[in-house]
Image (cartoon, rainbow, N blue to C red):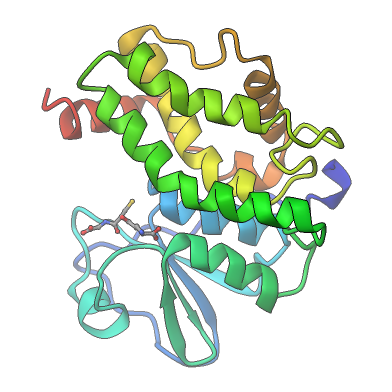
Length: 238
Ligand SMILES: N[C@@H](CCC(=O)N[C@@H](CS)C(=O)NCC(=O)O)C(=O)O
């Protein structure tokens, strides 16, 4: 798999806050409006890196806490990240965007042709919101009991195709849809609840290990300390 990983380490552009000027809009440059800490935006960032599109898709990182007013007013009225500026249009929604990048840009294809895999990919995309909600909700309840089934879903899914360690066998958009959230849940559940999501889930453990080998992903990883502080405040109100 490493051979297909087209990512090269890059110098990341500085974060734009409320005082920052707006970059030109619709000047032909393709821009990914993002936030370095956002798991939804991270999905698109990993896809961009894996397909080797660093020169084609420029990152415009925003400070969401001190967001430039021009973003919601002139770029994307939904005022969330990620959003992609491409061919005179602004497109949002991370799951739509990773598919859009895969179909509209060059680079390694990240969805297989095999019908059984395609079907399972759609099922897995549909489950992501429930997966995230189930785990977030468990933070306020019995973590092992409530979040356990969500991680079991991934463990079972990883048994489905045996031509590689990823959710569809080979690395795909499905892995990209889940990993930003699994990354955060693993850190937070271990740090705050002493719950190891990989205990008794060998396939999940191997999946995380394999994804961590990908340069395209490594560059996008969140800072664990910041994450724990952020979730403690935001979710546990501490
Ligand atoms: N469904 C959206 C969710 C995007 C989202 O919630 N992004 C957050 C940051 S992680 C955001 O922009 N929040 C700002 C806000 O809601 O004001 C997607 O998948 O792209």
